[in-house]
Image (cartoon, rainbow, N blue to C red; front, top):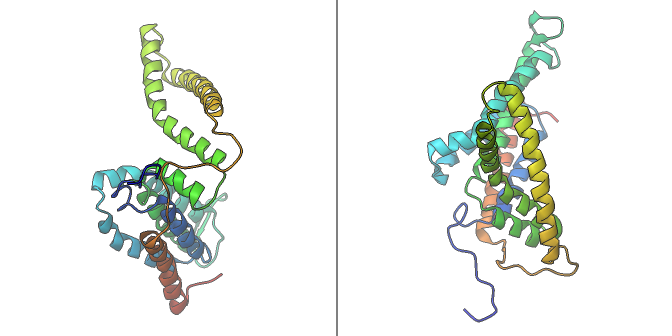
Length: 259
């Protein structure tokens, strides 16, 4: 490799070495198609296609379940709220005064739940193995976002892993002082406040350190690893957008799609 030339990124990072910004663009494109209509058919078709392609990623089931658990928990809560407070139409099942459950609200709840899964599943799964540095490189070099914003966000993401260590150290310090025996809720609230203060102090120190190293300097910035948008990236975007197109086409053919 000629001297002075930046080293290419190692092969096999993320999803078969695909630049993570491609997954971001693809999920956004898929989401645009799914939010145009609130029907059961389009969301069910999109979710079925995603589940059919999921084994190609070769993600361990335990990892998949842990990473998608926030989405899986949000789905029933979303469906319940829509079922209780959605627009009433059709046969009425019961009326609680503050909640009105009908066939229309139940159908709307099912469509919303499927849509949350169809958008949230790829939004989580495609970033399980993504490197935050690769994503930052793509945001700055491919999408041309401001380097100051991208590098600040990257530094914040890198610091998130320290919160768990800080929480454990706070717990051990309080236990050593005899403050961790009673009042679990009160103890958790005081520890959360202490963790917030610690995070703000670390963020301030990090900001000063980054400024002193020229991270906020004006002018064009150079990057150690070039981010390129090539065939694999376009293929990922095309697959995700195609899922939205197929789902919309099936819903239109079935007569359930409505703007």
